[in-house]
Length: 439
Image (tube, rainbow, N blue to C red; front, top):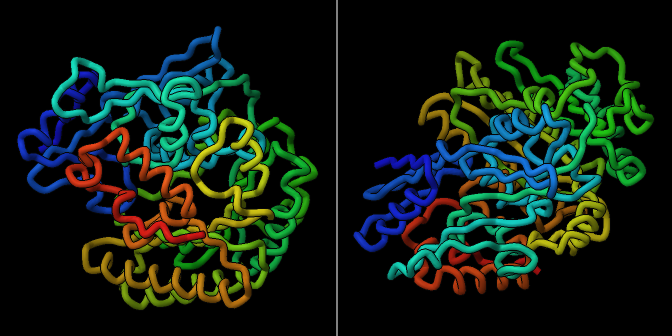
């Protein structure tokens, strides 16, 4: 059964009854197939709870959990303000913000979760306690839960409203540039240098990925570059922009919303993702690019119509993110352990049909294992996994470190003492199932 409340209070009452009646429940937000459904239970789809309002006096945007970033930016862009949000318009707000959230503005303001000033949360308290199950978590009220919600996802309750710090934002300069894969060595060199120097220009954001495109039947390279200050071709991008022979470019002055339309994922496929983190080591980049090409060759042989889409993507995670996080009260991501800028790797494979999905899962997992084994052999493996990109076989919560895992477990026990979100709402990554052994 799927229940789609337009009013959160009604949805909360409905979901509150599920554990008492013996039914399980699922809250929709995860990327991997099967995680958003429940057998013999109720799926609570908050998609109709999708409004955004903005208070100009406090500069706070209040966003309902069923929102996607497209709707948020459509509300805020005409006001000349924005918030730290997803870089693809169709990404959901709730999962993004309870998993950290990497943004165009992160070098300037940290993770998106660190810019949430308040979470309104519905707890699953049985028996019903006359409305006291609706609480706020912020720096003054329930500050321990406030910190845990920034990256603990569905382990405590249902977040029914996100209050985010807004700010005045000019138009951005940015877009995507496509290149022939023969420019790969230049892109790797440019990204290594970018990662080393990101703190010199915190307006900048750059993502580079290798992707097999079925329409072309070949691998191309895509660079997504943004300057949040609206500076056209700022010097920080010189090395990227000097790469010759691009196939196409959408670089322009544009709104936050317009740029998020550039980074949409292809629709209609079954998606398999894997993520890991490495030191800024050119040798590991080169290994990943080679493994990605092997994956593309394998899938082309497996799929006669060649209809699959891949990505081997690099996103830097610099220490300046952690600095901004600490200025805003901190989180439980565990990145404060890193003393140098590191790079997050994302591998995606989009295929058709259950048979191809099973093959794809095996191959993506193999690529991930080989990547981290190679990185470890060079001393370039980083024990951190981004929960918003992780797939079902991964354990991203454990990568936050022993102390942070202990804090999340403590919060889950405190605010969900009956363990409803561990046993009766089993979708997603559960702290009760995490090994929590990363130092």
